[in-house]
Image (cartoon, rainbow over the protein chains, first blue to last red):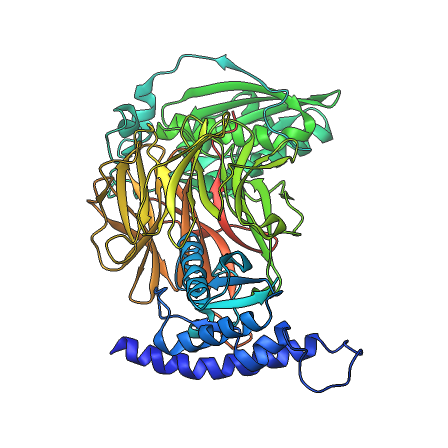
Amino acid sequence: MNTKLLGAFAAVALLAACGSGTEQSSAATGGGAETTTSGPRPGSQEDLVANIGDRVFFDTDRSSVRADQRVVLDRQAGWLQRYPQVQVAVEGHADERGTREYNLALGQRRANAARDVLVAGGVAPARVATISYGKDRPAALGSNEQAWSQNRRAVTVIR
Amino acid sequence: MNLPGFGFTRRSVFAGLGGTVVASLLPDFALGQQAATASTTVIDVTRARTDPVPIAVPDMAGASPDAQRVGRDIARVIQANLRNSGLFRPVDRQAFIQTPETAAANPRFQDWRVIGAHALTTGRVEESGGRLRVEFRLWDVLADTQLQGTAFTAPAAQWRRIAHLISDVIYERLLGEKGYFDTQIVYIAESGPRDRRTRRMALMDQDGENHRFLTDGSFQALTPRFHPTARQVAFMSYFRNQPRVYLFNLDSGQQQVLGSFGGMTFSPRFAPDGRSVILSASRGGDANIFVVDIASRRERQLTSGGSLDVSPCYSPDGTQIVFNSDRGGDQQLYVMSADGGGARRISFGNGRYATPVWSPRGDLIAFTRISGGQFAIGVMRPDGSGERILSEGWSMEGPSFAPNGRVLAFYRETPARDARGGGYSSRLAQIDIAGFNERQMVTPTDASDPAWSPLLS
């Protein structure tokens, strides 16, 4: 019963996170005056965020990739094969409802689980690094389940 | 720099005082006898909450205005230390009848008894050539006896350390166990919004004074822990975005990475002999416990398998290790032998258990418990029996024992009120292991991961 509830929350959170992620990255790249083509440069972080999805979400205290999240990683794998020069790091995170040291380990395990899917999808292992930030770099700053569901995440970032 | 351990001499002015005097002063306080009977005894927490000792701490006398000022400052630091411990009740200065000058020469016990004091400290400060000589005496005013007389000399800049050393003498003489005032706290100073937090390692005296930053914030620092004897700290650093355990020399500021692990290393703690560091290392999705010999940098793996084995901590005799692991499904505490064998679960209450630390006395393990949406700090015996929750709230974790095993430092967070994180805070706290006298510790910014130093001398 509890996990079902979490699943529903996370689905909502996914949409919210994608929206805010796009907003942030377009603001961050505002200085790019070299081209006037609309949309992010193919193979860039902005492209990944806007067109593929840069992150997947996890259930509380779990690090297995959920079925509804796997599709994002499969798309990432395909995208990475399209841009073979791109190197990425998968950043694993946890929500604030755990201890710091355990969450470092949990974030690492999440990053690793996401990386495993990318590698299984045909991405060379050497292209995918992992790092954990535990609970110390939340994406959502609230102290409620909606924020926590957005913070239990693995984010793929171009190195 | 304010480096402890320099230029101190200490000698007894009047030695030889009977233990019976202590007993008469504190007839019903359990700690004195407990400490005397070896490490297996457990503090009697029901009796430890008896009334705090009423003590008068008048300003110390001095021949010059400068010496008088130092004497006043030292007395105020001593009084604050004693009050903050929760085990002493300083008598209101307004009530004092005898002046500091005459009390230092010859205390009139009746004058102190009548205002409710059981103990009295007096002192005299001499200052010359940038050095202090502080003569200190402790009196049992019920028995009309001097309990202790000690003189300290030190550079004038070290007056606070003299005050802490005197506080420790008072604590030990009246309670029968070592104090913890001449110590420092290393911790993580936090600033900025939570998604872009700056985390710097910082060092301060246990009362919050002499604060200084040890790292500049250009990389994230976490979980510092003191070496048992040397001026060294082990901590986790994101230097060059590679999360690794480092050793930090407190005198030189030099840092060096510990070991050559392929992945993240974290949750370090020194072995009781200071020769090695126990830590967790993630090579894949797991986290296992390793010991790294500091001199040779040789590493030895103690746990294996796909579970998350984190936050290892040695027993004070170095024969056992407590850690938390999700090997049984969720986070629980386990104790194993120092060679990694024979792990057995010790936590069986409701919820998840984490961040175990072994008391320097050996008799207790402090932990964080997460249960029913609440965090708590508690203690249990090393076999898992006798669990007691000391403090509970929305979020708190990371207990660290004072060197006498009597007080725990930890950090406590308050939740964000809104989606921008407004209202969130993280602060250091301390609490008596009997579960009373919780106090917030003063830090310039938000703070986390406190670690208590050993006694500095």
